[in-house]
Length: 95
Image 1 (spheres, rainbow, N blue to C red):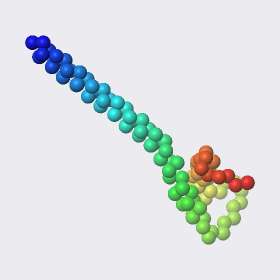
Image 2 (spheres, rainbow, N blue to C red):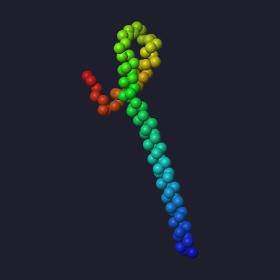
Image 3 (cartoon, helix red, strand yellow):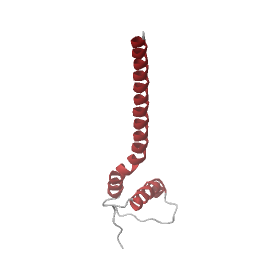
Image 4 (cartoon, rainbow, N blue to C red):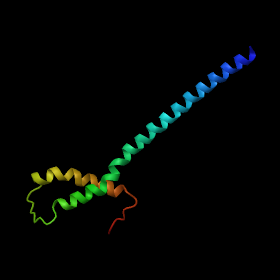
C-alpha cells in the first residue's frame, strides 16, 4: 500500500511540475511577444526612411504657407522616423 501511495504522490508531483513548466513557458512566450511588438516599429524604420526619401526623389517642389495638403499626410511619418532615429544610439548625429 505504501508503494502505491508513493507512486500516486509521485504522479501528482510530476503533473504539478509539468503544469508549472507549461505556465513558465507560456509566460516566457507572452513576454517575448510583448518585446517583439515594441521592437517591430524600430525594425521598420530603415525601410520607412528609404521610402520617405524616395517619395520626393527628383521632384522640384515649392511649398507656400504651412498648411500644405501634400505635407500634412507625410509630416507625421517623417516625425516618427526622426524620433526613432534620434532615440537609436547606433545612429551617429551629424553636426
